[in-house]
Amino acid sequence: MISIDPKEVKTNIMHSYLLGAVAPRPIAFASTVDKNGNPNLSPFSFFNVFSAKPPIVVFSPSRSGRTGQHKNTFENLKEVPEVVINVVNYALVQQTSLASTEYAKGVNEFIKAGLTPIESKLVKPFRVKESPAQLECKVKQIIELGPEGGAGNLVICEVVMMHVSEDILDANSHIDPQKIDLVARMGANFYCRASGNAVFEVQKPIANIGIGVDQIPEAIRLSKILTGNNLGQLGNVEKLPETVDINEFKKIALQDIFIKFGTNKPELEQHLHQKAKELLDKGNVVDAWKTLLAS
Image (cartoon, rainbow, N blue to C red):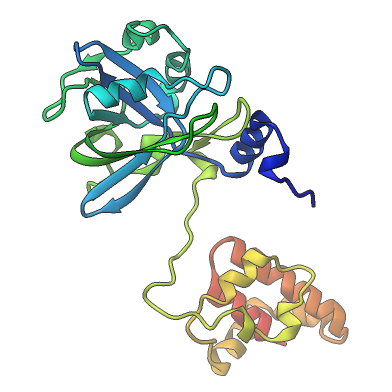
């Protein structure tokens, strides 16, 4: 493993490592206006949500790494402390990238990127009609992090109105991750798409207190087949299956394995661990535990 001292490398090198390691990052497609009402539209991947009550989002229009100058977005926020953050999905990603071009101040990126401005309800900047979710925000604070190129400027915003397209909602009126089809920034020129097989569920340990990996029997914990993710799944159960359930499962689901490998303990253990891994990969933690404890 290499070690990188920020004081010993050029800013662009540090920037590259940070963006490659801290990813994927959601994209704030920020719409602002200057004091004369001229619009600006630019994407920023130093962005996230930090509070629900009040609803707070933070993004950072950093100083240019080449010139050290502030971005037009930053200058506009100083003049009119309001912004609309439009989320970026796959259908919007190429136009979003085009809007990141460093056009001269006063150039309308809505026009350059071929996007449709629509009026906001509570703030002056326009929303992007094509975005599936739009956050109207008032700027609470701007924290300048440094005077040199690459230095960020934390823009802390309160969401005063949110707009969500009905097209991305599920039957319960929740945002469906497959329908919203979000994209995020990786390092260099890479993006990722949060849909299809890239979207998966991990049960949160809220309703119960898991036993923890430390309570898993050593023969299972040190398995050469089970991964760290698999151990995390096994450690997230509140209690182990009852012996009667294990024996019943053994007779029905594991009979063939025990008939074939029952006299060879190492082979039996290997095949039971492989079976358990298959079950865990399908999210069936209870039957995976029964499989592992069957021997």
